[in-house]
Image 1: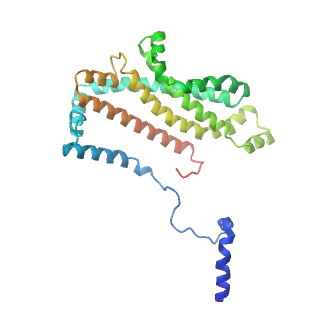
Image 2: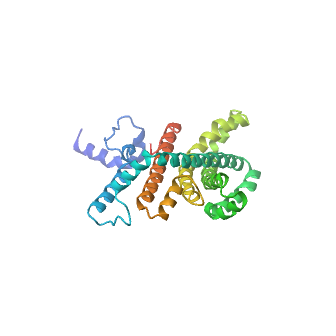
Length: 286
């Protein structure tokens, strides 16, 4: 091939644009575009934060009266585990968060389906949910105490209110974002209402549901922190409030670390389930 022919083909290549994507002779360059695989890097940020905390404590830059040293917190955790207090309070906190998360997921998902699949349902449901969205769930605690007292019902209900809104919002958005071509295809092949919901609606809403679930898990732990410090007699929050009374910074920091670890693990579990459930979906995150 002459030099002129090579130059002509080279000049013509940029004008071909996306058409090159379908050619069989195009070879991958070995360099992947996008963020790449990040599953093994999930603990880099928390580990760096822990190292920074330890370095500041060891060099004296961080006053232990303000924030206890990491090794002091670890020793405190060992003592509380030895006498069983940490496990007992952790189990109670996990039970409260689990119940609130369960009820919030059910309520949010059901309301999203009713609102997303029906104009009448949207007219009745979406407005009140948006009003609740504008009112922080923690602002309702005084009213919930008047209605239900300070027992477990109030605590679980507060967590539920903090959970169902993100579930509803993201699932509803997922339903409204389903491509109309799939709806038309379902009508063409004669799918029943139940088959349409099972084969089109639910798979289409899953990405939004899982996004809402990640927000909901965080909301559950945030709500739990508050309700357990309101006249509670058990739970991690009660343990922290009791430590505040006696000026035990190490126990307070331990409680915060427990909440942080629980939040990180919960988010990791949700993301793992999401990857498995949405394995058919190819995204940069995958």
